[in-house]
Length: 242
Image 1 (tube, rainbow, N blue to C red):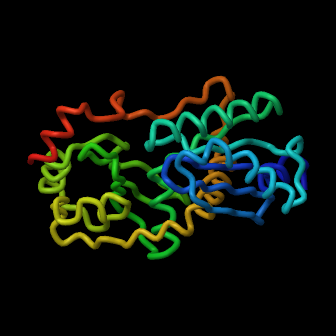
Image 2: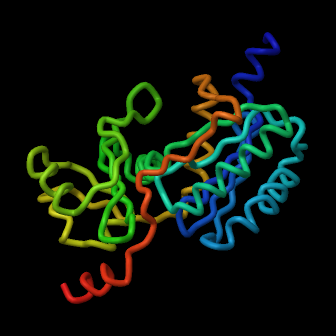
């Protein structure tokens, strides 16, 4: 087998996601993968690198032999996205390797596919402040395609969208947070497990590498869907009164 072909099919990748309250890290070596999931949130910035190096040691991989660094680009928590992007850039620039930005809603879709064999669904993640990160995804050609790109939705706007075109399958943290306030009609609401997030990350990173989606580390950016990250005191009081 040609060396370049071998490397494309048997990559060595480091991937991590800090967009939610769980820290997911994965190391890929060909068809093998080493995955870890632990509490993240504010701890993610302190734990992501130690956990990454622990997994690489378990896999017997030196950082210098990595082919690329993958990171969850968003949407998600502002601080988490900034952490993942900056750590990926720092590692990739130091190693002179490309980065692989991973859609964080597609991570939920991929876990749902592995657990429930779904091929088309809406992913809805709690965005706080009574809003939702949501997008519609379809599995086609061995990858997830965004039919409706990830966006920040108010509940009335998303419900109106679904009234016009009812969803069939739903997944994501917003289902538990908002319950029946998400008017999804007869759509099947898939339970959010989250324990397979690191494995889903590994699969998406491997697929992104195979499709040649690596970019220069200097060009990596988080996917911020909102500029405002907290309600004002008056807005919180109004929401509480409502």
